[in-house]
Length: 68
Image (cartoon, rainbow, N blue to C red; front, side, top):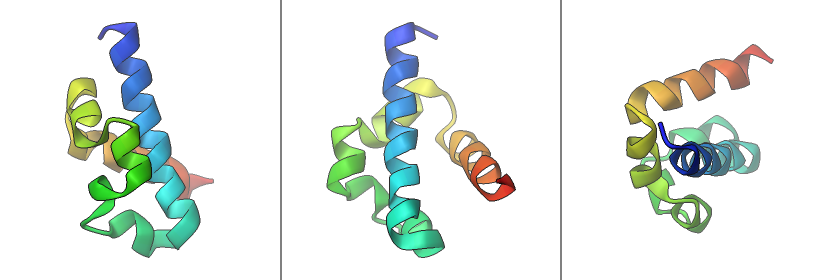
């Protein structure tokens, strides 16, 4: 994957993690998460698609967050 795409995907994942920081599990599980300004500004779902399978990327992010 291109370095720029990896950065954009990482930025989107950080924005999603930010939703968790703000709203806990409810913020993370919000079906409108990709419509929040922070996630949209980071590239939203398109940035995740560019990085691979969005469901797998989110599942891995969740595993890492809850493992801490």
